[in-house]
Image (tube, rainbow, N blue to C red):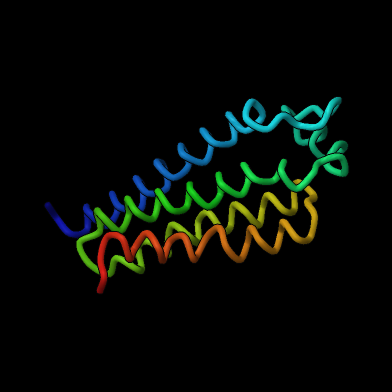
Amino acid sequence: MNPIFRKILAVVLGIVIGSLVNMALVSISGTVIPPPDGVDVTTAEGLKAGMHLFKPINFLFPFLAHALGTFVGALVAAWIAPNNKLTFAMVIAVFFFLGGLASIFMLPSPLWFTFVDLVFAYFPMAYFAKNIISKD
């Protein structure tokens, strides 16, 4: 297969599959850990209005969605990429990191969650995924 095609495929599939994992985890989060009573989690306005009622456990699935979405996307990208596997894993991490930053500006969250999410959910997961694919 053409190396340029593989590089493009690595990034596109990494983003798509990582996003699917992210969305799947977000979609089941409310059934696994119910939101506080009276909080509408179906709209950004409802989340903003009820964010002060969330307990730390309510942030578990958003963190897992960000971390595992990045991990799986980076794993796919590193697996498909013909070379420079760390670079491709980190491209996926940057994509998801920018999404995390956008999320912080759209939905207020506690400072501790913002820190944990931005520091641990993106670049470390991509690095870990690359190391699973290749020890180089």
